[in-house]
Image (tube, rainbow, N blue to C red; front, side, top):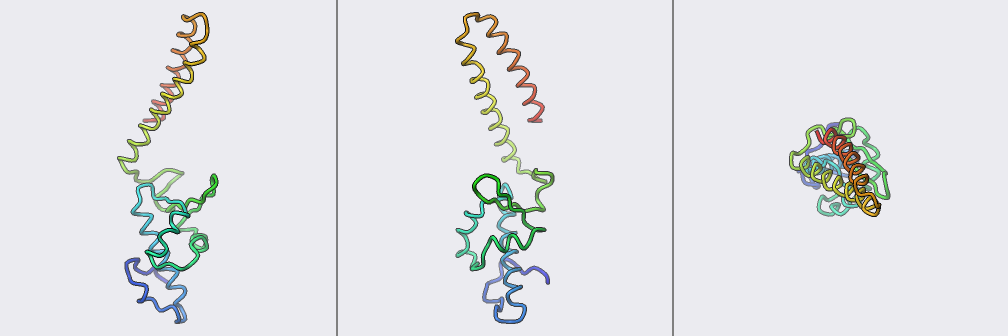
Length: 154
């Protein structure tokens, strides 16, 4: 059975007919697919997704539907929350077509984290008595760290 148009009204799908339940489920899958494709990261928490149930006229159990369609969605249980990914937009854990703004945002985040790591390296060495040795150690460690991050940013 083909997927229904996600913008079709719910009344157009007859639930009480023989294939009505399957058609309704396909409609929900189409809506979720369209919603995830409109997001920047092509993923969203299942909890946040459930907030839109009323707006999208979905009374079905979302987790059950997501689990029934593993070819379309991937659910990650990393951490304390469930996150749903649009499977076709990811390859080997990375977005196939990343948003340029999102890419710049991630690079800026890496630079901020690099600065925090550099500052955390400086604090213990400031307490040492021999400042020449401390500065030399920090310089060599920070250069190695910068080279590693420069490679990972490119």
